[in-house]
Each structure stands twice: as structure tokens, then as C-alpha cells.
Length: 106
Image (tube, one colour):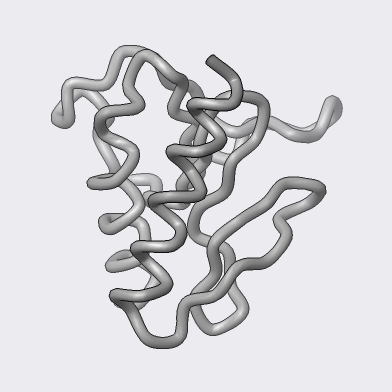
């Protein structure tokens, strides 16, 4: 399953890079990510995708059940603009990638 999820991320990344000018691959911490104007808006890490969707994003409105806020630091609170979306909601990864890019551009 891990290979399938990684392949799905790469497929999404390729489509985004082809469809949207100014997007490119980059690193977010140690994860492979997608950037616009050198700023990360999505990445793949440990069988999940991470998206910068903003503090006003409501995961329930997209029917998401497999999510949590990004919390990369042990001594700091979660980053409430960043959402980790697990494999149970992988069908939404494409839509969320597009949404994260649109929010980044705004």
C-alpha cells in the first residue's frame, strides 16, 4: 500500500506541475513536496499528504475522517493551517492539492 500511495502522490504532483505554471517539486523538511513560487503547499510524508489549507478550512465539509493538524515539533503546538490527510481519504488528495494551490495563490 505504501508504494501505491507514493505513486498516487507522484501522479498528482506531475499533473499539478503540467497544469499550473510556477509550480515545481521541492522539499518540506525531509519530505518530497510541491511548491508554488518556492513556497510549499503540499507534500507527502509517511503514507499521508500534508496540505496548507488555512486555519479556516473545515475538513468535515469535504467528508474527511482521516486527518489531523501537522505537529512536527515536540515542544510547540500543532500548525493549524496545515492538515495531514491520511490514506483513508486519499480520494480527496487531488481536490485538496488544487485547493491548497489556489489558497497559496490568493
